[in-house]
Amino acid sequence: MLKISATQRGAFERAALADFDARMLTHLERFSPRHLRIVGDPELGALIVVGHERAELYGLVSERSKRIYIELMLMFGSGFATDPQHVWAVEPLRAGDDEYRRVDRLRDAAWRHLDRTASDDLDAAGRSQPGRAAAQLQQFAQFERAPSDEAGLDLRALLVALLRRVFPAKCEDIGEPALVRTVEQALATARTFALVTERGQALFVGLAVIFGADFHRDPQFTWAGRALAEVGSANERTRIEALLRGATGCLDRFWAEEG
View 1 (tube, rainbow, N blue to C red):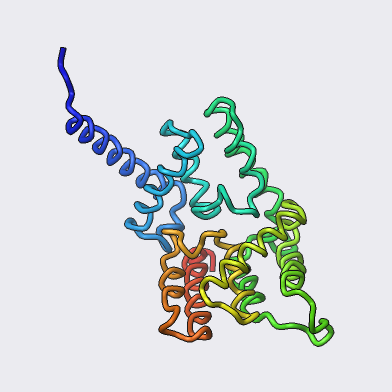
View 2: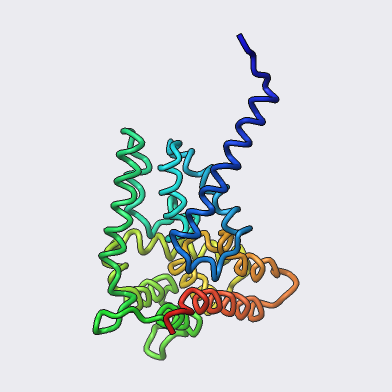
């Protein structure tokens, strides 16, 4: 009987993983061609590696299951599985039943969520608006308290109210507890990057909702990591402007064909 050494087995596993990565890269380029304008092959490759590992944490081990998981990372951000705004992902990922049934429920839940929240991205006539996401982000970038706001009013409450105005369908779909957790988590993360002004924290919340809670370390959004890495060598205003330029450029490239 032939015996396969640990070295040979490791080589086979690496070759199989490389084949998967190559097939997945080709698939993602077909799945969402727009992403090629904002994410290069190296970044997509890094996303695939992260997705492969995270999918397995939830018992999604088949190639089809991993493909669906990585597609959702592309759509909702690399950290969608633990992002408090994506409550639809919790049950399918954490249930104890068959992998294939769970991943189908996960995919179906994602599309239902998109259907229920689509109106946030449409005009009154139901048409897609290419500049809408950038305009939504600007409302967070330009955040300041209104003269009528009480001086001691909690920033969290103000940002929850702003989210309800900017993303009414999403806020209705995810519910108040998830909405509050989304804001609280984003504010806590913003402070770890020394974003201490209300404008900086508001922008971070907007970015977390639009690009996903883990946007600051998402392989798709390297502009965010670069801007936030300047802590200690650039003042907060400079970092805020770098974040805003990166995010706006990303959105403009994504919608380039729609202008």
